[in-house]
Length: 515
Ligand code: ADP
Ligand code: ZN
Image (tube, rainbow, N blue to C red; front, side, top):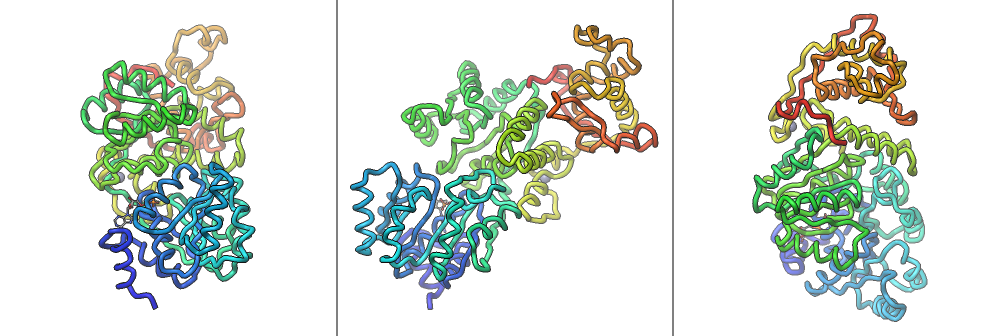
């Protein structure tokens, strides 16, 4: 019987920690009882200990399956420096190196082996000769096509349970909504797994969403107000990271770009400079951050809307790992939404990806506490408002927007549901531009009925009308705005529509969004 005392001593002596974090001890206990376990913990929550510590107490070998080849070496070096015999096997090694590790495993000189799923075949030959005590599957969401980071090599892992029915499997992930969670258990053939879900709430992270007007200027202003604080700006494309970094540099900010297309050397240099506080800002694609252990990232900005809430949450989670107050800002633009919808609809699992994007968008457009929305996505019910998001700090005011809604929906009808949002706004505002004249829209009824409302306000109201379900964007058809059946109620049954004024600085109201 392994007591709590033994667990604490092992934690202290081998890892140098005084106490367990949330759920670590419970997970370790379950694993030590040979039960299948699903551990869901936010990034930085301390998942590694959950298999590293049992590995020391079990008689046999612990296999750790991880997709992050780049991080295996660091993890193994860390274990070795704590005196724990560990190795890794992956495709970057020579055959001799691999054979050396296999020999050490056979000779029971190794307690933990990290292996990429593609490389499992190296071990298969010796499966029958070795005693496997635990199989840990890190980043377990990669097995699920419901997840945001599906890896085909993971799909085969289901055979492990059949091959080793009495060996416990510990699946770990930082990112799982309920559907993904159930899918992980199913695909891995886990036997009545014990599920541990640590709270995802990171109270020290403030949440804010801003319209993407003049993003670059907003970002420069923001950084200039935080002279010494380092942060990450996530962009959708490699090109965007480079362009933004250049603009920031021109404004005198120590910024660098980071993406998978850059030389490994440049990437690791940028990473080191960032960690050592020599580079204040990294403009990055989502390739940046996995496994970067920098505790004092003070802010994270999303230059573009993320593809889904899991990714967003993981990315903002890189701020404030030291527990101190940190800021996050997400810029939302109509153009991003359209582009992401296109990507999603062309990729694998289009329907799922589109649905996830839709939830992301709903989050960005939310008119109630954002933290509640985020946490409910991860299955956590919170009743209190957080007071640390832009909505809590500055609640939107609603007004009777029925007339505005009627004008907008009528305009959509007049334009035969065949124009995208910017044209509808120009039409409502009576713009005298070439496109309007070319199509002779100036002669239609309702042309110019919305002239007293700014372009930007119309943009916000129309997005609200879309979110309220009165109209929709047909992104398969050049993003034309179409009415839904609900629109009838507003147009013909006098249904009241509540809209909200989104507070934007007065001087920005007149500008068109830069998408
Ligand atoms: P995850 O894999 O969940 O992102 P890690 O296992 O890498 O997290 O742990 C994140 C950091 O927290 C590491 O630096 C680790 O050493 C530290 N850590 C883990 N458990 C504890 C603990 N019980 N006490 C103090 N620090 C811990
Ligand atoms: Zn809130």
